[in-house]
Image 1 (cartoon, rainbow, N blue to C red):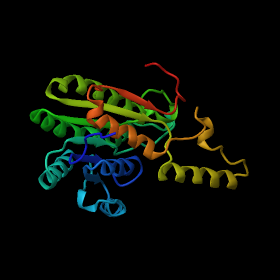
Image 2 (cartoon, rainbow, N blue to C red):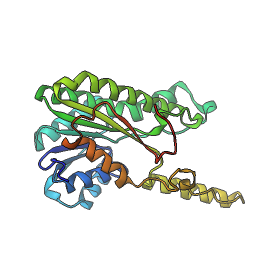
Image 3 (cartoon, helix red, strand yellow):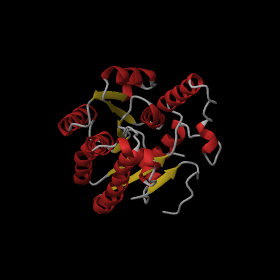
Image 4 (tube, rainbow, N blue to C red):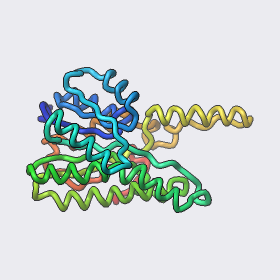
Length: 261
C-alpha cells in the first residue's frame, strides 16, 4: 500500500528512543524526510546514526518545556528541510507518584513534562500548516488520560488534557486542511519499560519476595505492544489513506481497557 508519504517532511519529537525512534524508522521506510527532536544531543545523534537513509535525516536538540526552544527547533527544521507536512508528538513523560506524595509543584512538573512539551511544538506548527492549507498531526499520548489511576494522577491529567486538545484542534483546523489525531498506547516494550522490569526484579530479590509478573500477563492479548506496532498506526494516521480520520483518539492497549468512550 502506497501511503503517499514519499518526500514529505515529518518532524518527530521525543525521537531519540522508544516509540519516537520507531516512528522515525517507519516514516523513513515510506520515503519521507525526517527531522528528529529530543532534549539530549548525544542520544539524538546516536539515534540518527542508527537509522538508514541518513541523507533524509536531520536532528535538532531542544528542551521542549521551553516554548522559545521549541520554536527555535521548528524554525531550524523548516529552514533546513522545508515546511513540516507531518508533526508527531512523542516527547515527555510524567513521573508517577502516590496521591499522598503529590504536591502542587509535582502537578506542575507533570504538565510541563507531558502537556506543554506537546503544546509548545504543536501550537506554532499547526498554525503554519493552516496557513499552507495542509498538514497532519499525530499525538502519542497514552491510556493514562482515560483512567483514574491513583499512581498516575498528575501524568494522567496531562494526558487527558492532550486528548481534549487533540479533539478540539481537529475541529478548529479541519476546514483549513489540517488533521489532528492521537494514539493512546498502554504498556510498550521500550527500554524504559525494560529498565523498570529489571529494577522491580532486583527489588523483589533483595526483599526476598517473588519476582513480579511479566507486565504482559495483565494485558488482554497476553503481551505488551512493540514500539513498531504503535509506529505503524502513527504512520497510517499521518498518511493520505487516513484522509477522513480527524479528531480520533485511538486506544492501543490491545483491548485491555474495554471501553466505548
